[in-house]
Amino acid sequence: MEVPSRWYNIIPDLPLPLPPPVDPPDRDSSSIELLNQILPVEVIRQQFSADRWIDIPDEIKELYKNFGRPTPLLRARRLEEKINTKSKIFFKYEGALPTGSHKLNAAIPQAYYAKKDGIESVITETGAGQWGAAVSLAARTVGIKSTVFMVRSSYDQKQQRRYLMEMYGARVIPSPSTTTAFGRSVHGSGSGSLGIAMSEAIEYALKTGAKYLVGSVLEVVLMYQSIIGLEVIGQLNEIGEEPDVLIGCVGGGSNFAGFTYPFIGSNAKGRFIAVGPAEVPKFSSGKYRYDFPDTAEILPLIKMITLGADFEPPPIYSGGLRYHGVAPTLSMLIQQEKVSSREYGEKISAEAAKMFAETQGIVPALESSHAVAAAIDEAKAADMRGTSSVIVFNMSGHGLLELDNYMKIYGDR
Ligand SMILES: Cc1ncc(COP(=O)(O)O)c(C=O)c1O
Image 1 (cartoon, protein in one colour):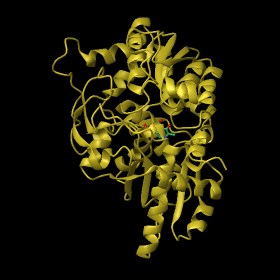
Image 2 (image 1 turned 120 degrees about the vertical axis):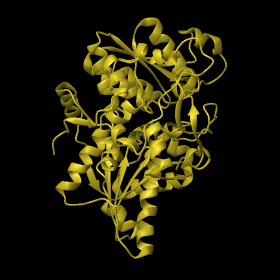
Image 3 (image 1 turned 90 degrees about the vertical axis):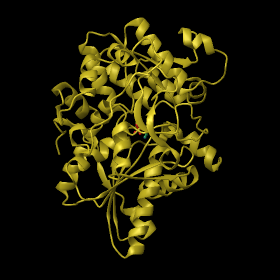
Image 4 (image 1 turned 180 degrees about the vertical axis):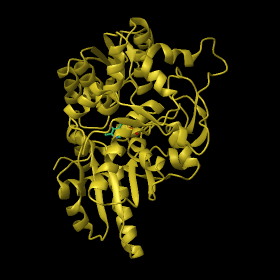
């Protein structure tokens, strides 16, 4: 199977026109204009493109190949045996990428387009470190520098992730920092947050003329991730299977969208299940309305399912699922009932992860473990109905750099 040559953009295939981003009413300066300043030129163009297909430049395709794309589509036979199901369970393994998750798929094009703009440095923020690691490697690969504002509590606790970024050559700054005015204004006030780190990253990008790279939520990021689903379509064709159910976890929505949109866009039969954490109940308690995508309220308002930008998530271990909202296109597809959603608590997800590790050998990222839990439930439900399903889920990352989190959940054995 070849690496696909085009990304898929769902915008022209949505059931309704997508409500546009808008400036907050009480602002002097335009936050939409801010995006033009901080994002690479081609990224902003693609963000607002209505073209269904966007060619992947050969250089990016080569980088995807170099880092192991296509990633494997594997059958979880031993898991099937363990739960004694008649269904077939397949998973797309994005953990096979060098930084351990799907995030690299979106970091590579953004770093590449930043370099094309003649920019020498890119900036981002990271929570637990998956996105920061992807940006660090992508920047190093295209030959530019990277600076990552890392939430201070993670910086202190996740030494290995921090060091991974530094190994790739990134400058990692704990946030709140003294590097930016915003950081100085809140410095000493605690362990930081993604909102503070993001504000620092954007301020620093504006000050230094560097470009800012985005990890999820924006449509263009979801489109870069479509490489996942396009590969899965080819891989399932090769083995003559057609999915009945496709499942992915949702933080901002990028891995779920990348995995399912190519199927949704081609009117594939199947059901699509988006899984979130019960501790951040955006699917069950969120409202579909205009809200800030960022806690710092710097970016334009977007229409999405949200718990409110000021929602303070509990400290669940799957850091990547703590986001308060759901990407606008995915929010619309959920509203229109094209995609269904459900929530699992940390305990159920971690148990599913343990069963997966024991049977398949792969320790899922805690984020991905929510998808594992849903896949197991779907198989059991099919057995109860007396049917068998072809269930495919996206294993968005591995959890080898978060064994400390599993240790906190299960205790030191
Ligand atoms: C492994 C993994 N899966 C899923 C997510 C959730 O993000 P998204 O919904 O954008 O895929 C993250 C975010 O950090 C992650 O690291």
